[in-house]
Amino acid sequence: MTQVQPNPVIKVPTQPVRFLIIDDDQVSILAIKRALKKLKIVNPVQVARDGREALEMLRAELGESSVLPPCLVTLDLNMPRMNGFEFLEEVRNDPALHRLVIFVLSTSDAPTDVAMAYDNNIAGYIVKDNLGNSFVKALDMIDCFAKVIEFPS
Image 1 (spheres, rainbow, N blue to C red):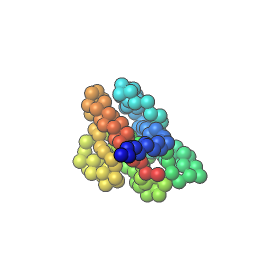
Image 2: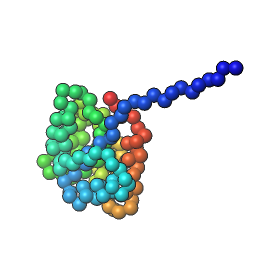
Image 3: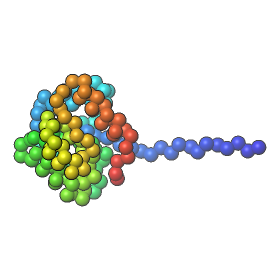
Image 4: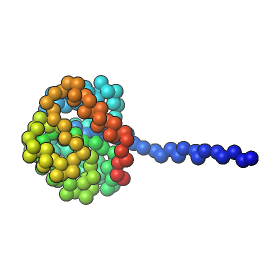
């Protein structure tokens, strides 16, 4: 009798998902970083103070390549120079960036803001009304999302 050997696990090299925080509020940025630390999330984190700075960072990272390393964005809506909606419009119209995974983290709970954000294909909308425990749970959910989904290549 022949014994069947299980298929060996094929290990595919992967890059850790990088978090890009786009927010002009230092308190929010610190709260996000603190929550990531509390959750023991050690992924690389970058910060952009507005949409324009974020676009410059993302496009510089693309360089000659047309593929970004795995990146998950948390986006505030109300920022100077280029707000979150302008950033979303620019990203969704850019063939190299249009698949970017974006979660909105905003103080606005206005139905029009929520609808407009989802119209721009965001992955989720989280209201920053409580930077405490519910905020940590929201970031934990985003971390789980980043670990489970397959990013486009």
